[in-house]
Length: 112
Length: 111
Image (cartoon, rainbow over all chains, first blue to last red; front, top):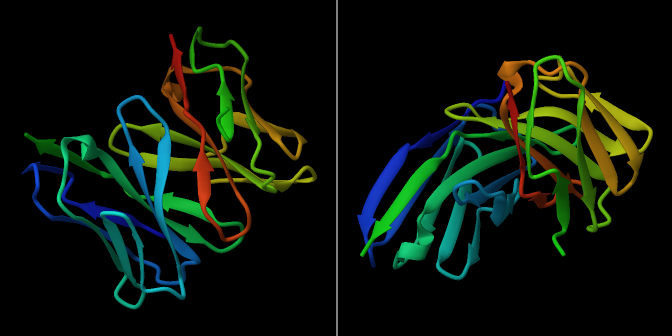
């Protein structure tokens, strides 16, 4: 059974800092990996999708990497802003329909 | 309009009542999913559907049923709600091994 772990569970940083969120998974036979953002009481917003054949994806200040063989992904956020404060979720897509297995998230707070 | 719309957004119901959560999507995707989110447990898959005639159980399907009325509509039912089904429920869609899109969620409270 696929298990997804996110470390740290919570993180508080000053504005402007570059930061890295970590995601690890136990079964490397994935189709893709997706990073989401969740604001309190809100839905999930897709940030980046990395297919299993890719090593990284970038969108603006966000960069996600994938190392399937070691079962790891990182989400790099450059020049953090208070508006980046949210919970970040990592999810791996498995075969048989792109069913997603989620980590429990990293709660990020960016302070002024 | 949102790509994935869930109704209702909030619902309080009593133990033993039947309740239906509805989901519609405008993405044109063939695959639809229902997840529930509990504090500390992350999101878990309840049911998923590849098309109108293909419905599959997920990790935690006991106590739930689903109906795929059309490619764009996928509803989740709790036949007899119980308090431990209190959670945040999400509907999602995807096209093959591609990006998944989620609705805004339905906060369900069973008292």
